[in-house]
Amino acid sequence: MTEVSVAKDDVAATGDLVALRNVNKHFGALHVLQDIDLTIARGEVVVVIGPSGSGKSTLCRTINRLETIDSGTITIDGKPLPQEGRELARLRADVGMVFQSFNLFAHKTVLDNVILGQVKVRKADKQKAEEKARALLDRVGVGAQADKYPAQLSGGQQQRVAIARALAMDPKVMLFDEPTSALDPEMINEVLEVMQQLARDGMTMIVVTHEMGFARSAANRVVFMADGRIVEEATPDQFFSNPRSDRAKDFLSKILHH
Ligand SMILES: Nc1ncnc2c1ncn2[C@@H]1O[C@H](COP(=O)(O)OP(=O)(O)OP(=O)(O)O)[C@@H](O)[C@H]1O
Ligand SMILES: [Mg+2]
Image 1 (spheres, protein in one colour):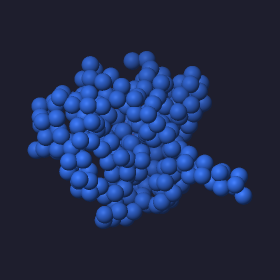
Image 2 (cartoon, rainbow, N blue to C red; image 1 turned 120 degrees about the horizontal axis):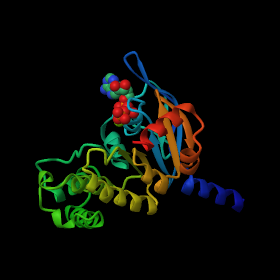
Image 3 (cartoon, rainbow, N blue to C red; image 1 turned 135 degrees about the vertical axis):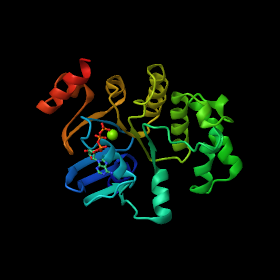
């Protein structure tokens, strides 16, 4: 009896957090996601790579329901994605997302950007929300910028604010869609370091990136997509040293040798 309940608790504590089952999506005639099966365990860091147009962004966007799917199921923590309303707002808080372009509210200060969702969606007390916002801004290294507006910050700083804003919602999982690809080279590392730390702290993360150094050091698993399909899944070591598919070999030779 005891053994059974211990095993069950273990599953609850360490089990799958995000599960896509047989997911399909079309944009008109384009079959952009084809029979996607993907499971992400609690605390796992999955890096998604693949050629332009392979469906990486669309995959991310389906997970917080910025895009609907045509068939299949997506569950977070065992629950199907809600369709609309307050439940959907809560889902978007549970699934934090950081995009390539810095999508902060331009007319709000950095501090207010990090406070807003906590108060509106999580119904947090304003004072508590501000304390948490300041702590998170310190954690990502932009505490001194709290009273500025986004346009007064560098791209790297804005992207770190975007991460702090997502974290303020206590997300269950964080999605990153090429968070450094719009940044000047000298700002890339300051963002990757924040993401590395987040990974070390045990955050469940899905990261679309071409930063292979990050994939090698932070990812538990690399998922390679091409033409709307998951072509290959492997540990970073296996994937980079011994890709199995021709598509992956071709892709790696292009990105590693330029
Ligand atoms: N809203 C949309 N309407 C129609 N087609 C779309 C839409 N969004 C994406 N697509 C198409 O779906 C395919 C996959 O796009 P997606 O943005 O997911 O690819 P990606 O792997 O993220 O590419 P990239 O590396 O360039 O960001 C592309 O052919 C794209 O043109
Ligand atoms: Mg994309």
